[in-house]
Length: 481
Ligand SMILES: Nc1ncnc2c1ncn2[C@@H]1O[C@H](COP(=O)(O)OP(=O)(O)O[C@H]2O[C@H](CO)[C@@H](O)[C@H](O)[C@H]2O)[C@@H](O)[C@H]1O
Image (cartoon, rainbow, N blue to C red; front, side, top):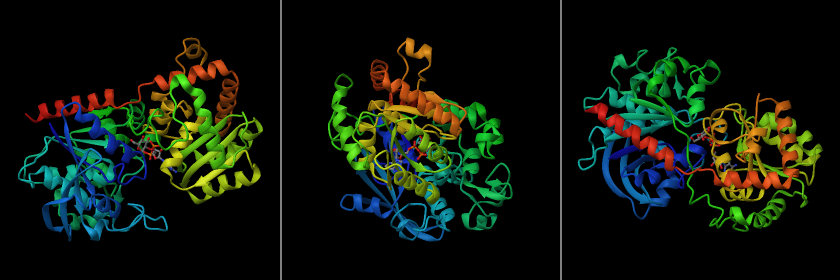
C-alpha cells in the first residue's frame, strides 16, 4: 500500500514539537507492515541543507498559488521524502511558522495552502509513476490537502486527517478565498467557511474520509466545548469516523541502553547507573547534588502545558524538599517566572530557556520525575520518553496523559502496575498535592524502584498503534472500491 503523508515538520530534519516526532516515526513503523509512506514536507533551509547532495527533481509547479515551486525527492534517515522547494514560501531561517519576534508569518495561509495544493496534485496523479492509495494529512498546515482534493477533477483518493492539537486551527480572513483557486461553492458550511472566516482545519475535518487524533481520551474530549475549541459540533457530527490512536515513540532514538547523548547508559536491571546522569543533570542546571528528588520539565512554556500552575507551585515544591530542572521556551512571562525562581532558590531550581534536544535526553535519563500539568494534552510524548528512561511521570489526568500513565493509587501499587502519578483537577493546589504524593513515594525506595521498573516495561513503541493505522488505511481503501 502506498501512503502520501503531508506534514509541516518532520524529525530529524525540522522540529518544533511532537508533530515532527510522529511524522518522522510513524512511516518507519508502518514499513514493517508493508506500507510504503512518502512524506511531503516544505523545503525549509534546514531540510534543503540536509538533502542538498542527494535530492532529485521530480516535477515543476510553475505557478503554485502565485509562486513557482519544484518537487524534489530524497531519502533521509530511513524516510522517503517529497520536498516542496519553494523559496518564496519556505526559504526563511528559524522557526517554520513564526517570524523572529514570535508572530506567525502573515502569509502562512498561502504557504500552507501551497503545501496542501502540492499534496492534492500528487494525489491527483501529477507524478506519472507514483500515485498514493491513501493520503494522510497532519494538523491545519496540511489539512487543505483534502479540500483541494475534494474540489479537483481527478477521482478522490481515500484520506485521513490526524489532529495533533485542535487549538491550532489555521483560521484566516475570508478575503483570501479568491487566491486559493477553489470553486465558489467551497466557501460554504460544508466546505471551508468557518464562522464567516476560512478554517483550514475545519475544511480538513469536513473533507477527510476519516479523522484521527492521538489518544482515545482526547478523541472523546474534543466532542465537548471545553476541549473542542469551536470544532466540537463538527467532531461530534462525525464521531463514528473519529479514531483515537495513541502515539508511540521512536524506541531507537529513545533507548537508555544505546543513547549516546547521555552520560551513562543503563537498563531496568541496572538503574543505579542512572546516578551518573543525575549528577550530570545537576551540573547542567546548577542544582545541589544531594539525594532529594529532581523534578524535570521539558516543554513549551505555555498555558496549554499548565506552566503557569507550575510557576505558582515552585515555592511549595522547594519547601517540600524537591528540586526542579526546567528546559523550555515559550511565553515571555513564564520564561521570566522560571528564571526568577532560580534567583529565589539557588541550587534548588535550574532553568534553561531554549530548545535543546540533547539536554532533553539528559533530563529523561537523570531526573527522578517529570512534571506535565497540561490543561489539555492530545497525547503527550515526554511522559512516554520518561517511562522508557525510568523517570516517573507526574501528569494531569487529561487526554493521552490519562491513557498512558497508570496512577499510583493503592490498588495499582498493590498489583505493582503503577507507573506514575495522575492528578485532577488541573489546578495549582492539586499539582502541589501530586508533588507531595510523589515525594512520599520517592522516599519509599522499594516502591519507587518498582514504579520505575514497571514504567520501563510499558509498551511505548509504535507497534500496536501503527497496526491500528494500517487497519484504518485498509478500511478506507475498501470504502473506495
Ligand atoms: N525546550 C525543549 N528542548 C528540547 N525538546 C523539547 C523542548 N520542548 C519540547 N521538546 C520536545 O518536543 C516534543 C513535544 O511533544 P509533546 O507531545 O509534548 O507536544 P506538542 O504540544 O508539541 O505536540 C502536539 O502533538 C503531539 C504529537 O501528536 C502530541 O503528543 C501533543 O499532545 C500535542 O500537543 C517532545 O519530543 C519534547 O521532548
